[in-house]
Amino acid sequence: MADDVKDLKIIRWPDPRLKKKSEPVTAFDEDLRNLAARMLELMRECKGVGLAAPQVGVNIRLFVANPTGKPEDDKVYVNPILSDADGDEEGEEGCLSLPDINVKVTRPTAKVRMQARDLSGESFEQIGSGFITRIWQHENDHLNGILILDRMGAVAKLTYRKRLKELEEEYASQQAEEAKRKKRPPGAPRGTPLL
Ligand code: ZN
Image (cartoon, rainbow, N blue to C red; front, side):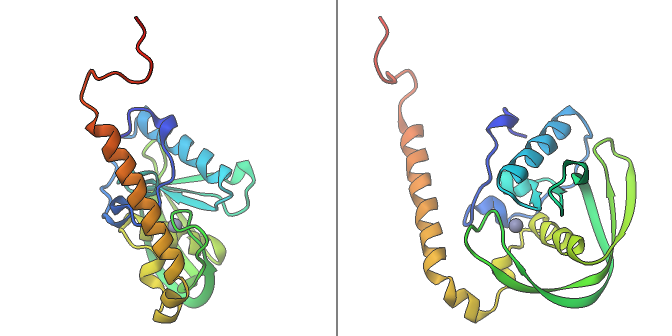
């Protein structure tokens, strides 16, 4: 887990951490609660309805969701398992890790069973239908390294070719920045020497 949870930010495609399969949570401790609180904060800031831990660079099986934006509807799902999905429906989805890309995705949304744990490790079960099940499935995909890009057709991929190229370039320049910062030898002066 990150040293300072407050520094966590939403990462963007093509960051390889978005393509990894995440590991189950085993410790229901303060670190986990802090991570979830920070994710809820980021989700709210970005006006999202869901956010998965790999989207902040932490590859564990946890996501947060809030379909209404009301604080009382904040919900944390740890080690979620989805089953009994039924009733395919097409709907548009965006992703905080793929800004300015909207994809029509067909998912079973009439009924989905969710089994998960809360932040204290207690298991719970919910039967959902409609919009919430789309959020669950989108976020659960993130835990398996699957993005809406993997669910879009050839035509949509072509439509967003330019945007994807931009995101690739942004990521490459970020990586170059990072490498430059790391190259600085230890102990070398950083800015004005204070003597
Ligand atoms: Zn997403």
